[in-house]
Image 1 (cartoon, rainbow, N blue to C red):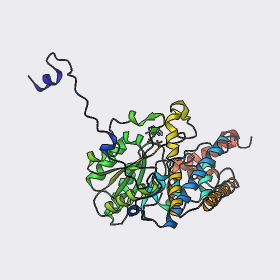
Image 2 (cartoon, rainbow, N blue to C red):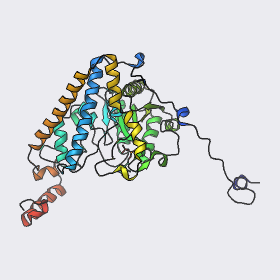
Image 3 (tube, rainbow, N blue to C red):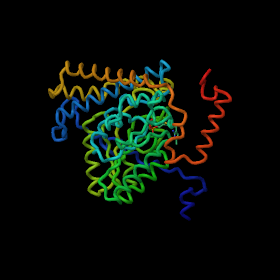
Image 4 (cartoon, rainbow, N blue to C red):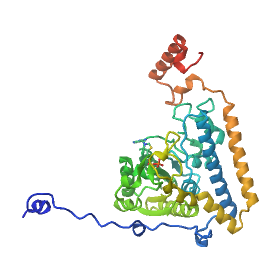
Length: 394
Ligand SMILES: Cc1ncc(C[n+]2csc(CCOP(=O)(O)OP(=O)(O)O)c2C)c(N)n1
């Protein structure tokens, strides 16, 4: 019997094939944790000082308040669109805080916190959401798609996965130039279905490119649950196929995320190649302000995750350690609220619209003829009919 006939069964019909033995998630890659259930931590894994730990907590609180306030502004019609990271703060700040100043960050679209950590002024970020004259992106981008070059924070882009090969290319170039730089690239588990994920991991593995791949596995790609995105038991095990180090980390445990990222960075610098970190977390709110998760997600699924809130876990640890008390915690929250409030006021004081020319600025070092012609065309159209520019003069 030919191998094909054997496979198809004696009568030519497709022989039933046994499904591959499922590897239980926990066995395939156990979840690395540092923060214990009793709010203590493995002392060997706590490399940050008390002051650094409190600073990390402050960033996470600020980011939470920013997200809540920006959703509020969107609901009031003051901004058009927002995409936040409520519940995923440990995955964002644990990773970004473990990188060095010279490293580049390639964000997905939920990691504004990493840009703020790298010095993006809060008011500039709000200007970007308002699309006003203070918008550092000059109106070239969708709202909430900022870049921050001084902080080596590459542009957020909506197409899923495109940042992955960019991060690999930048790190590879740095190595060729003998610069000590590691790229940190973020993406959701949905992005692991993209071509760019496979291209990026493959080439990074072959050439041992110094990259940290940080996958925020938050359970959902808009309305598609993780189980419908991949049949693999974990995301971390995908590293095996590309010859990378893979690790599954409790993504709501900021200390575990920080420790795993620090080690991944050190491995990358030693020339031991890239790492894929699967940060297991949960998106507590909608995908963006354009989404309503109640349409596809049962509340019973969400509630247990609220108890695993990364802010609450870090706060409990800090209190138990004696690094934070109730009064200091309340003061810190009030300061963060004021900081966000001031940024909104400062941003809203900017003129509502940037000058028309900025739409064409910075695309090329010198505008090419098509841009010059388009600007002239726009000016003529405006002169003929002021309504062309979204109600100018009407
Ligand atoms: C190439 C491409 N395909 C589809 C989309 C539409 N889209 C926007 S966000 C999203 C889900 C992404 O999920 P995930 O990567 O898990 O990130 P998360 O939003 O959960 O952080 C999709 C499919 C897109 N932006 N780009």
